[in-house]
Length: 345
Image 1 (cartoon, rainbow, N blue to C red):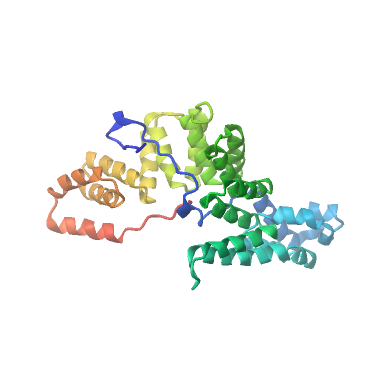
Image 2: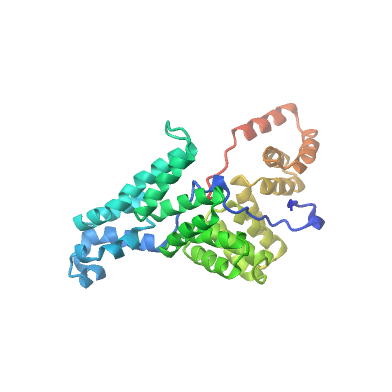
């Protein structure tokens, strides 16, 4: 159902939902894994003070004694920089992590084939082959990307199998995608969905935090819990997730799950608008219009209209009638040169 924005409040909730597994959001995934951060930190610090490290004490100061299967499981969700850092700890680790370093190359080629970049013609079969080879070498990043291809081509069981492997190895993106799959498959499995979404959210993945908040807010698969929903919206918003910025603004505005706070509502609405959320741009523009800040208002309304908010058109035209031709031209120029602040997707 199409969501309306204020002032049409009687027509339904303004809280927006996110369609699952949107392709444009998959490529720029940020993996937040507590095990990644902890292991990377221990890897770098151990080089300078291995004698005092708890790990070095347990294995007699010799990193090569860490079982390779344990090391591979720990490093499976690593990004390329973290993998490089871990490989530099000692020769034994460098040798053990060679398959994962190879998977990074396969992953890079898979993305080129999938999106037709780097002088390579798009070829989904070759992309999937590269991702699967990377997954076979133990990389959860490759497992997730292979799962995405399977999901997009309708092979949902294969997708979920790969997501599950990644999720069980601690990959927050795999956990989130597996949770979403459990919501979408027929029959759905709300219990498993919430289990994996919460695990991913607790690992710091902002998209999972937002999805978890939506479930708790809308009461689709679990009992509505506005207090918990607002908590996860706020975490995702603080982590840079634009849709969460907009929704936490609404929570503060109407007092859902949080004490009503107009100042914080305005803060988060403006932040969402500055990050490119078209509904937030429309509502922030209306707020500025009500305060008499015409030039600022018409800029945000112009941006909202360009983002697809047709309701902004009439109000923008009303303001244009009160502005000089020079001022109108200045606003149009500002809007054309405007760029959204970077956000987490």
